[in-house]
Length: 366
Image 1: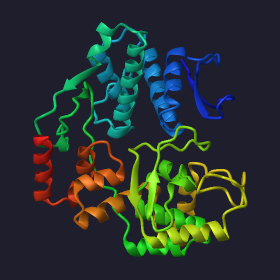
Image 2: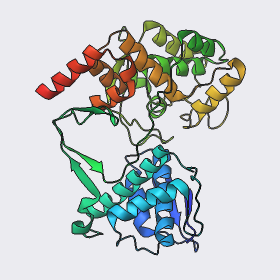
Image 3: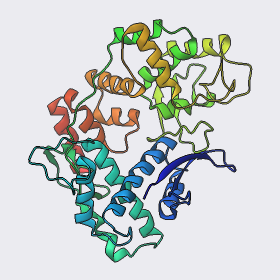
Image 4: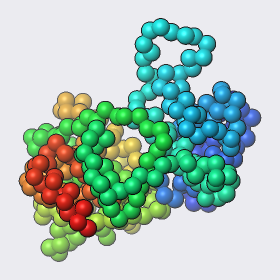
């Protein structure tokens, strides 16, 4: 079965949608219902990624001659992970080691997509709950574990989490940080104030790309209030979404002065609510599209030799705060992480061991 993941625009909301079509261009209804349910809560890129993962799941089920409503959860999911890892090995038996064609992270994301797909259909009673309730194993919280799965796993006692029955161990590698000198070089290489402001907000707030592109003028402080507020909105015309928690991030006076200069010297004469808009090409005054910051940074790489991307500024920001002895709890808030475990797992390399154990003890006392 050949499936196609087709991009489209919802005529009623003007939002990007993704359609799963078979070889006759008919919608694959179970997948489509799930993808449609994600539109209001996930970014278009996330919906596309989940659609790609479910396309592979459907192809795997077709390869195994399985009905999506009648699978052996544990065994078939393990087979799916192996199939994604090495491809179809049913016709050739090799005595040599097989090179992986997909990373552990990619496969784990696909397993998450399949898991949440079945969770959705469980909630809508499309599948038999007694068959699929074992899709996740409940992971009991309350006991701190420090091991290969992360610095802190399960320390949040407020809510129990679920652990997937199948999950590959990922090799964790911190992507690194930018130096102050590199950030300065990138800023100085910008020809426009808008792009300078973009880099300095990334560097000075640790905001995600979707959060930055969803910024409105009302989110930025003035008259001595030096802050930028991250607000969750679901109706941004460029598809930008704030994935993390809402929060208020303090910024420098100089950053807001650059924002004011940008408004006076470059901002187009439109009534746009958004901070980062098209100025020289495209629909003037419309919010910048999601891939434009990456394109801007790619062009700066050609000029400076400094390779970067939006999320690298986030790592730089968090590392800078932790090295300045900000508490992990404060950094968690500023990054918009839902769990302290996320912050500690990613940035354990710069957290003082005594501070780490202090966080663990506080979590266990709560």
